[in-house]
Image 1 (cartoon, helix red, strand yellow):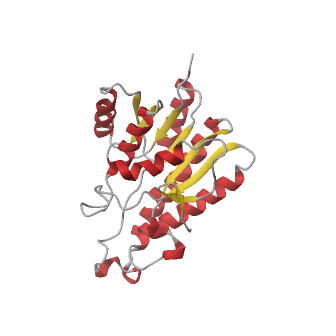
Image 2: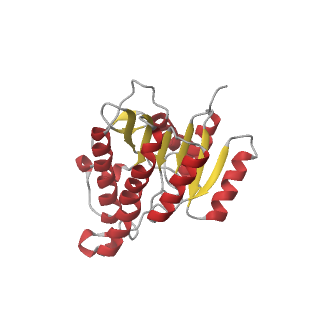
Image 3: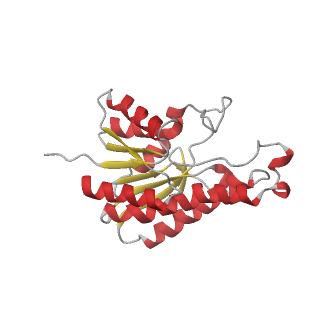
Length: 237
């Protein structure tokens, strides 16, 4: 009997997370769609399941250690292992880009802490809990952003920028510590995507943005690890 690979996607009741769930499920994955908002997450998973896709919902608040532990324990009891983790949950905590309030000189440090807690430490917390369930073979995708690239760093939005730069560092550290295993960890910038965060003027559809995430989530055994990618192409940190 063929056993479906198992993927966990965080922050997945809408946008890139939901589309990543759909694309992975259509590739034959059993997908665990997680979200902090239970009603919205359950509804999103049900819509995909109604299309014949193997998608299940679990509540997850990446900023809550107890919530992460409950997810980990439930996955271990129900599914035993996982094959893929997509850390998609994230926030844009800053005032609107271009506004005077978005300057680093005006930055509220509590806003920066919020960004780090969700976008960086939340992803790290989930990795610590779930990578051991991969049993030495799996794929981890940290959904990052070009706004976190040191090589192209500009002003404004320090809460978001710092959190994504730090997430890229987490990616590198995890990848190095997993050398010698079959677990590959990469960061992906999906590009400027028409989501609630990206806005209606963005250049890419949600489907287009999710493709690069799914590419990294389904890498072959000889694929890369410890890299930063956009649309399947390596980009500078």
